[in-house]
Image 1 (cartoon, rainbow, N blue to C red):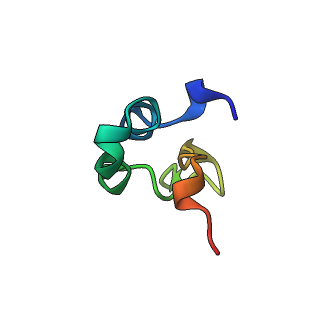
Image 2 (image 1 turned 60 degrees about the vertical axis):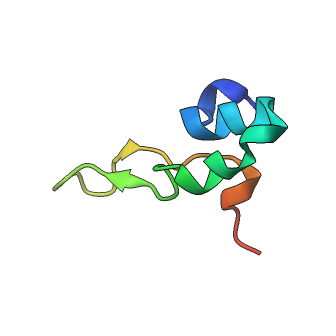
Image 3 (image 1 turned 30 degrees about the vertical axis):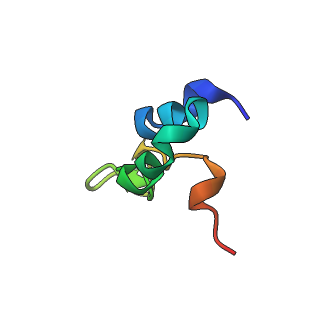
Length: 54
């Protein structure tokens, strides 16, 4: 996975095992659409595996 696409919280949590709790603080758990953008995404959700649906 391209680490540059991860949220800051998830990137730090992946680098340091002592900071794993930062995954829970990720603010990019969902896509954020552009208002009135007809499906355009303003901020994509974090691709970290901690956010994948089971």
